[in-house]
View (cartoon, rainbow, N blue to C red):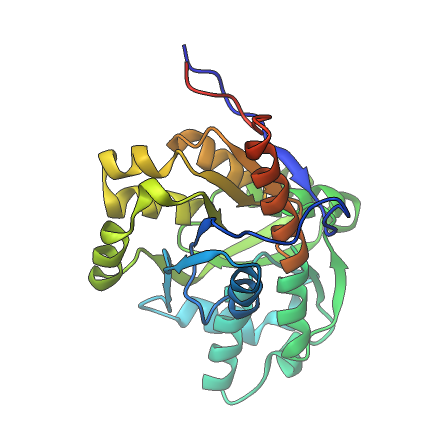
Length: 287
């Protein structure tokens, strides 16, 4: 019998009793070092052995016409809800191609963001954030803005792999939703797959995942048997949808960071490692 794992959430502060060392621990980060340099620096400063490989690649859609039209009419929307830094970056790139800026295109549109990283990215290109979600999900953002988006024109610029939960939630709140693919999310390239296959998964103590797609792409890249070994590691999941994906793929020990901040990720990792060391697993064990 296999029991489903439970997920513990950890916020921004590491408990005072938690030793700030990962000596002897091997940690896998599902991003390139350049994508999360501070996280990698902190892990190595705490004596972790680190492997960092990107499980996602991003590219513009083959045809940007629909997105370009939406951007030129951005000021006609009531809300623009942003769920990732990538949406900001690809929208900013297209605005430059249109010889303008997102700040100039935005007009009076209200901008809502999921997560501090997304909000910071939006602010960095000159957008003003009208609302930042307390819950780290698109559906959470929709529920928190339910009264404010009712009957309003809402723009979504999202990944090619984005699920339907956000537009469905907005539609239930009577919002008029325009949902457009702003960028394509792709799996790792062949060189990265080869490096992933060569990693000593039996020695990995913890793996940090930032999205459901990253979890799925690891399984696709290394195959069934290596993945069985990889799922013995502690999973540190950023957000509830990532935690659910980790559960479905086979991870049974998992902690969930409440937000995608450096502090929250490190706190979750230490809590999970401490729980494993004391044999108080954060999830169920295989029967």
